[in-house]
Picture 1: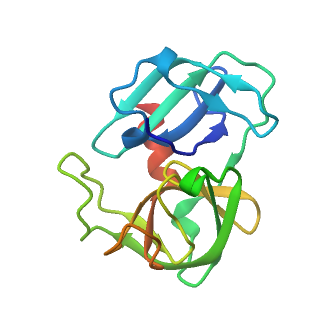
Picture 2: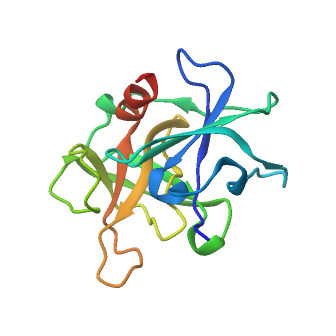
Length: 176
């Protein structure tokens, strides 16, 4: 059973609320096998799951109408050295927040499996560990600028080199 994180958003051109996460978090699961557990303990089941293996993005369409969405920021405006927060559930520890800076932009020379084709990762030193996948990378204004997706590690734990899918790419994929 895969555990991961996600972020509730409203997507331009789509009705209702959606949870953005990584494809590798929900890969192979049917809608009714996926649960979204909110901070208040409520458990939701997505109505529909849209996946894009090439970007490792999954979009879960939610039935619930009383959700508070996060707001996307403009990932093209992110600067190296800018402070960020990474939210997730590393090792099943829900609602964990770590901090760091943007270490690099447009990182593409990393190998994350044979289907992932994106070449514009944001690199951060914020601690991202197994279970953090799909959680938001947030700027100091509280805007989602990335979706945490991978770590570079020799032992499977955080080594200060983590990668997030830029929010502008996530929004582009959601429009397709």
